Length: 292
Image (cartoon, rainbow, N blue to C red; front, side):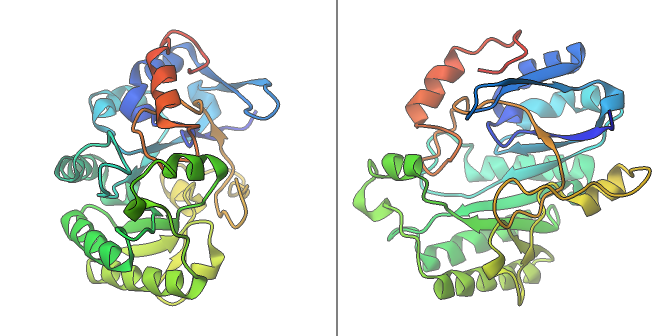
């Protein structure tokens, strides 16, 4: 089997909440996940010879920071996709405060280098209270705080899946989601991209090709170019394998489980509800190969 990229994880925040489980999986050399549609159980090898690189997705890598040496000992390079949104608490119930997130981001970037820590301002959530003016102010202050620690920012607009609409319906009226027209979304993203550029960053649009162009580029979260730099592959590049329409990601295997992240973000596609995720998180067993 060729060495593969392991995504940790689009389904949950492993660095924030599941470090003991992940370290146990490294020790035993495999993890399992269940296909959410078919229910079929899959196994992913985590043996050093089978992992080309890890891609960590997180809002709070602080619990993993003391253990990065153990990951490095495995011989597989890694990088982080680190979400910092700075939204009202009603939207993100249990994420770290912005000043704490900025400090952790700077610490991680200093440890790994800014090229291996990419900021996600994602999703861009539109409502009466979080309108374009809010995002210009909010993005600007975060970008200024992360200047020098981040070289790229990945952004997309919130997708209104059924579960997102159900959870958002419980919000106060001013925070109910508004999708916005494409020209307005493009104009906002271009403004944010220009603000990012003024601070030495590139802004890249994720899974929304209509927003690419002008100052905004196309995101590849599981980035074949970055992987080629940190984990060169003998015999050519990884193939692209989009996870959804207009995705630019390289092929990877994702470990983790839905409904196991208690950050409580109302717009999250990975949880049926914040309450369900918290209950399943509390019932987890770190010794199991299958999370959740």
